[in-house]
Amino acid sequence: MGTIIFIVAALVTLYAAGSMLYQLLRRQRSTVRRTGLLFGLLAGGYMAALVLVSVTSTSSTLPLNQKKCFDEWCAAVVSVDKIAAANSSQDYRVTLQISNTGRGRAQRPDHPHVYVVDANNHSYDESQAAQADYESRAGSQAPIGQLIQAGSTFTTTRVFRLPEGAKAYLVITEGGWPTYLTIGDEGSWLHKESLTPLE
Image (cartoon, rainbow, N blue to C red):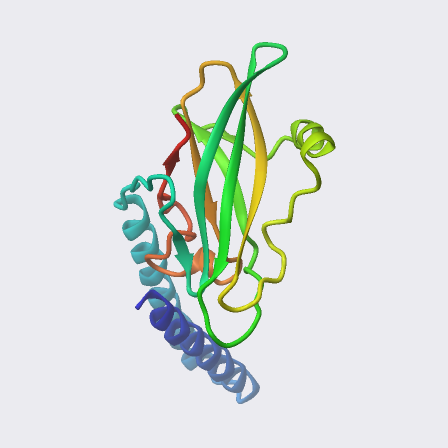
């Protein structure tokens, strides 16, 4: 539903822009102002709805092995290994199963992002140093955003380094523009994400 609303809003924006350009060329200044005012009210209403839906959203908890799907591209946390690291830090080795549940064609996700947040809402991306150390012993890990054939799956392990004792949750998101401005989409501005506890 949010995607349909976004498409309608985009078409209205194009129509308003075209109308205002035509009115400017015809020197219809008062009409331009009215069109601009109407468009401003509609755009303001859309943004207000986007923010309202996002700030009233709630985070859901995803257990291990539960898929989180974005259309036909899905990801699930299948295992977590907690390992003490140097300098009062903690490594989490998170193994993900990535799947393409479609039947038609190979595809790759649109701007996938996997990261960890703690109880204080600090976010942590994959640790390059910890990941390199893990891969030096376990072998190269497949990138999350690689092309995946229809009906197939693969696993990959990503390593995150957090301060020792931090309560951590994994977040999986997918989608760039226009997801950020789609009302009700988990990837939209200020919307709360679903979380997988790493403890």
